[in-house]
Length: 277
Ligand SMILES: Nc1ncnc2c1ncn2[C@@H]1O[C@H](COP(=O)(O)OP(=O)(O)OP(=O)(O)O)[C@@H](O)[C@H]1O
Image (tube, rainbow, N blue to C red):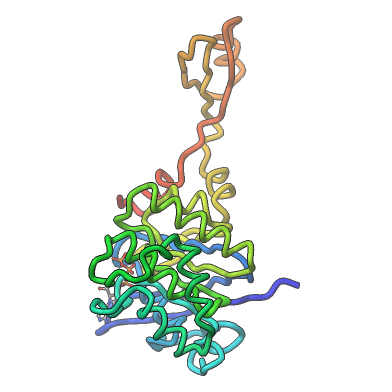
């Protein structure tokens, strides 16, 4: 049976009279990687803060792990993990001790620290001071810490922002592995390639309003310009022509190798819908 881990119904939030979220509704099923996309200031962090009980909405309903967010308790907090750029850590402590504090807080065995560090490839750095870590290593430490209690849901606010492609790829593999184990992941990202690669479902937010949703393939199909096709000949020369009989008769010659519809990338769809970069 599918189980809604997260849902929002007609949620509104204003700060000093200025709208941050307007009538937001969506739901996330168990085991999904859910992409929450939008330009800077569109309301992504506000949404995470509401769902994790750090901020109250003005109106509408929000549920996490079957409970209204205003009623989240020990059980729900011990089943969620959060990584954001405001996630603090102890710089003067080793990586291991940073995780030990969390392990004790959550009442989990020390072996979980080793497992978690191994998962993010930081086991050999466990005795390093947190202040000595690179940005990518710090991000992986925060991820390891958020995973230590094996949460049912992980909120990741731009987890690969500023990381090199190799470290980002490692984190992507880890997220897909977590998903296989049944973890639900709420991911905000500015990286459209990452969203296309990882997410089962996406929501696109602009100025606090939900403007599009669906899975990446559905969205790309929806915005594919069916009226144009690209004809490639056998030496790789490409010609874009209207998808009409007379054009095809004229341009599909003996040297035609393939005919493809013009598929936009998620990034192009994003820019088209938000008018932003
Ligand atoms: N505590 C606050 N007080 C006043 N305004 C706020 C507060 N938090 C957020 N806002 C405003 O609400 C809107 C949404 O902000 P939010 O941080 O949710 O955006 P975001 O999509 O997470 O942006 P980014 O991608 O830059 O992190 C912005 O206009 C922001 O200035």
